[in-house]
Amino acid sequence: MAINRHIQTLDEFTIQQMRDFPQATGELAGLLRDIGLAAKRVHVEVNKAGLVDILGDAGKMNVQGEEVKKLDIFANNEFMGVLRHGISCAGIGSEEMDEVVVFDDEISNQSKYVCLFDPLDGSSNIDVNVSIGTIFSIYRRVSALGKPATQTDFLQPGNQQVAAGYVIYGSSTMLVYATRRGVNGFTLDQAIGEFTMSHPNIICPSSGKFYSVNHGNFFQYNEKVQRYITNCQKKTLAEGGPYTQRYIGSMVADVHRNLIKGGIFMYPGMKDRPNGKLRLLYECNPFAFIVEIAGGKATDGVQRILDIQPTEVHQRTPFFIGSKLMMEELETTN
Ligand code: P6P
Image 1 (cartoon, rainbow, N blue to C red):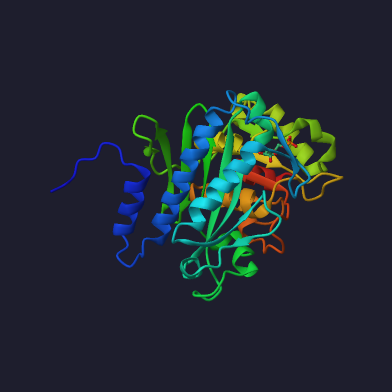
Image 2 (cartoon, helix red, strand yellow):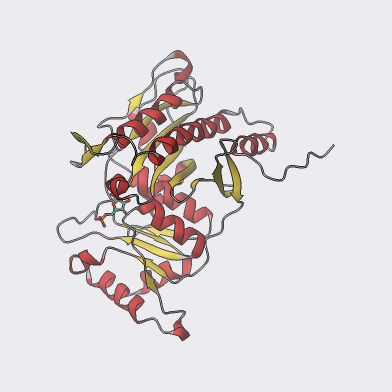
């Protein structure tokens, strides 16, 4: 008998995906459900951040030399906690931790996957109530099962990702994740406390009218990037313009908007920071995977983000991502 489901929850969807692959062990489905659980807990704290003394800097500096706010620490501990106590993850890397954490217990050592997280990206926006997000990346281990995960498991190129996703804590809380089968978005229904399918099979429009870049750094960018930005400002109606410049200062929000409506997001290298600001492993790779599966493109200005061979967990990269035709126009700008 066909079960008539108006709206699928994230858990139901991951289980249905598993049913479509009889050989699946259910570990990936379980891992995604664990991430969904931690995201719900972070959602609760983010939504009351203005009410309790959880705001304000924790006083610590993270590995990036940035002040760490208490919500960053809470989010990091939540995601690490559910994965350490789950059965699907052998260890995690995180923006908030200097080194990767290998769980090294009997169950975790048998787990097939490792995860990388930016537990709360854009946290400098917490105090002014701007949307922030969690970004995650999932790899199949290359090290032997039954033993602890190794650094090599975390330093795989982005084209080896099994799944990647993000949570955006905005006007509503959404979890979007991609596997090679597609990109799907789930909105948190607080009435039942479940992420429910709201954006099935997300496709990134081949072009758009939004370009996202920090204009304050304009004269730090190379001439090619400056020329592309200037061209964006000059787009006529006949050329698909006029374009709108939208830069929220929270990458999850900017890239999410461009994924849904079309557009391009840029965090270029600069004269004093040739590798830019964004991190390859837990910011750029996950979004590059998601946007490519949805039909868009992502590069470092020279090569495909997903083809970069990482050498360290917190390495940075210039980042250009978005609609296919807008990315190709950037690439052909001389
Ligand atoms: P800037 C937030 O700190 C972040 O990592 C991204 O979410 C955001 O896109 C970027 O930095 C903003 O950086 O230098 O333009 O303020």
